[in-house]
Length: 225
Image (cartoon, rainbow, N blue to C red):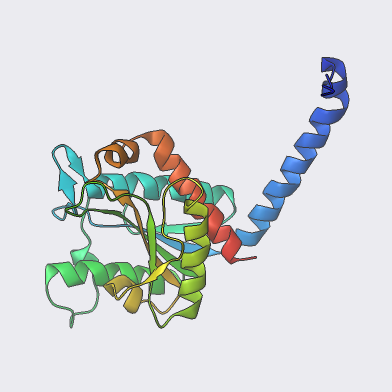
């Protein structure tokens, strides 16, 4: 086997500039895809609603950490991001629809109203899963069954998440409130299972949270191809 060695001076003068140009072109292409797009990033649960939990681990905290990472990544790509929450709060008091009753449903409706009020293009809700079977793991993306655009968005995100974690081969239809009530393409992402000990540890690390955010953002970019 012939091995080619490249001198440092040659690399500095020729290859490095070329690599920087290619990287710049790729970044520009990605930025162009999401330029002026308005994306709602919803960190599921919050405040008195902890979501799923295990000793010392609350779903609402993991959801928020990944949502904030996703916002940063999407901003870098030129998108405008509306966060449902930036801190540990619940949103029932933000609901404007007096016909919606109960703290739980008012909290969910406030998230849908945010999408309407911000004139958003897509809605992405971040959650963490929990089941009795502690061996179950992986990320899952859901869409409303009557939304073809939602299905396409969910599929592009599912494909990217599959590259870093075990996922089903396809996204799944579901009748979640925030999917059914949204008038725009909407997805709900279960980024992993906090009931799986190994995945629970991963979900709490900044590096893995960043990987999840980058994969979700890549899926969003692919949706706009």
